[in-house]
Image (cartoon, rainbow, N blue to C red):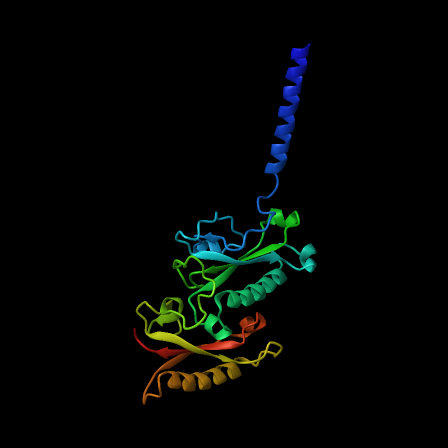
Length: 260
């Protein structure tokens, strides 16, 4: 009889463990927020996705991304859908602000670096179970990059003080429009040298014509000054339309033609 009880007890424990394991497997793996400071080897394809489950790598090893901010979204997002546009807009403003602080850069510098940021949210399953964290990563490239450059062990303060050319953006092409954006250590024909502020945070979009006219006038003068007022010089500019304005951008970028 004792042997039978032992067998039944063993079977009961086994069934309990099996049930606990199955319950654990049914929960999303990303309910808990990720860690600040984690490094990863992300690609542009990874960054294009709203979520990321890439395993971290030691920051001493080669990596293309570093998590610089993690936190909880506002409580008002509790009832929002996983893909609500308001979530993305809030995350964009949050990651942009913390991006500048992390790199030690001002707004103008941030717009002239090859570095950019990406943000990730919990998976849909974790979102449905109440997860509301966000993760901001600095990555070694931008929207046009086919691949990312490797980052240093930590990118914190990387743009504080005079930045190195490998982190600044230049362009390789006959004109700025459509040119391939590259680090300024690579062959190029254009360098992003300054930016112009077109309005304050609460200002309405002034319209395409006013943005272009103001940008063109400013860039012509500022690039000439940057080149030390040569008799003849070429300049270019990049301006952004209402969608970018609504997302928080208030600047255009000025480019000087200057070969490496």
